[in-house]
Length: 308
Length: 308
Image (tube, rainbow over all chains, first blue to last red; front, side):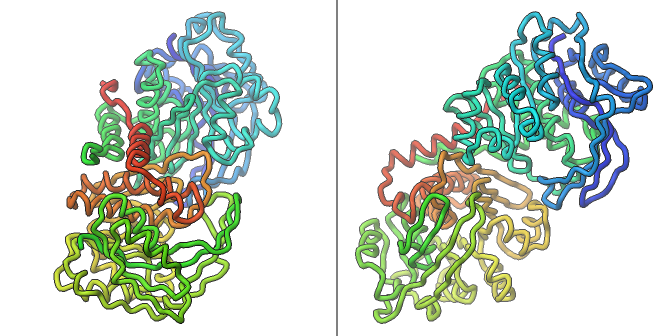
């Protein structure tokens, strides 16, 4: 298998200024797999769900080329559940309910067939589990990318730092980058975080785009200005899935190709926010994706030759 | 004269998390003239100052090619004074003191030699004065660009709307665009504001960059990620000055050239914030500016050919 995705598969209940849903499919690995499977069919999924998780949702991903052997189904358990309410700016939200359920006992054993993983995407999880997955791999993948969140900085900072030291690309949002580094300037924060291990750092800024840092180099991708952001849930995971999906398809881990991967991830995220849950991802055609990427080119493209 | 700049020339007292200054040179027309004069020597300034405004500051601009006939000096009056304190994020600030002083009686009569103005930059001022300047011109300039602020939306909305209806390019920040349009989505806000008259709308988002809207087209320019933002005062006016300076030099008012002008403005603004007041602008060489613009190219440039 070329690309391994590790993370949660879950139920979400969401409130945004535009609507409310009680119980829809969510989870970092769900969003990442939907996005990545638009670019590569060679994906292995590592997650845990309860007996309440719909089989047809697992089947839909299988049909996209996502192997489910690594997804543990706890028949008498309940899937992870998260409920949140977004503020008007859609960049901030309140968590209303977090029920870990089966995620509390998540301690994945990788199937043998997952050992030939070339690219590893570690979704936001307890850092000990992220490290356990890396340690189970006999051969180090070409690229390990890891997402995390402020919660682990508060309750498991030492473990988190160890995990960060083991990956190639760390992905956090701007406030997490500031918290992790103790620096307000994102340029200074990026230098400190790179010194912790990852050669590449992606800082997500929601509607304000994303930054990719590598040594002294920096690349910026905007978010597409949209008429309506309907539901930002999963946008970060979708971004990650599009990013690693492009990398897995091209098998090119250069900084130059990562720039393109950031644009691909941004394009996928811009679809994700148009509907509740991962629904928008399910209906996308190749032409939709190409046309959206063209919009990004138009958005940032300018003619510098006029400046003499 | 090719480019006319109308606005305040003033004193500022500033507090940022990095320092404090009691009384330095400021004003929208000061910053805009410093930035624009890096690109064209053919500038006419329209402003008002008190007898307390340093002659050498006026002379320094004259040496850059900025004509001062339109700057009224009220010998026994005091220059406009503004004092503010920035928050840690540098995007928000509290106004501590506003003393209008001579600005209260600002009612400029344009010198005859200013009649051949091709490009007009109206800095943030009471809308009645902005309209009076337009109305005094016998021949309409090729491009009129106008800055404003939320204050005028609260105390002079009808006049403001009339002024907006007379210009080609309106420049506001994101919260002002939302307030003026009553729309949260900047895409929807842009459509409503364009319906008020201006064919082009620039929405400034501080450290999050700037958007240029024209019909259904949109262009985005990031702000350069900086190690330190020392003082954001005047960054918007410097951006405006760089923008209109590039337009005045190239005499090209197409959407394509405006994109480049936005990048030029962003580059100038990125210098402005590195020091208190307009000081950084005074020491810039052509090579500094070219190298900074190259950084913007690097920042957003990606290879889309890899996506097949």
